[in-house]
Length: 150
Image 1: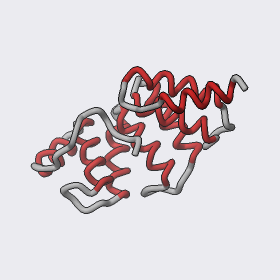
Image 2: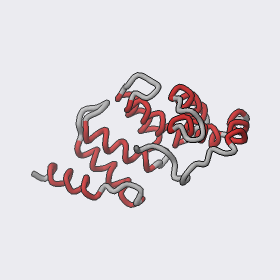
Image 3: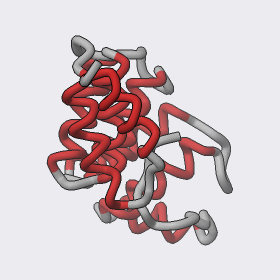
């Protein structure tokens, strides 16, 4: 799964404290609530609650929430699958220098989801994600370069 922040494992306990903080408009806690609902860790999995909390965090400019909303639209989790909206949310995330957004844009352009297939754009986004070390994109980059130079 290509969503989430580089925060390591999220421990939902004490989830009450996270929820309280989220209700007090902490975008980080709102993101954590969304993530816990999304994966069902420490709480029953609920995509509707996940998207609710991700949107609250996104309203405050949380780049991880932008990416997570994009992922939910890409997969159709809690929302109707919509590649165009997924692409928009991934772009918002990428504009905030979120490496997950960069990676996801590479995949979207490579596969032609939400846009015409654009291997040059896919290569651009994968190369942007490469130095972070978070995503193993070396093989993707090699394949795309071979296709573009064939």
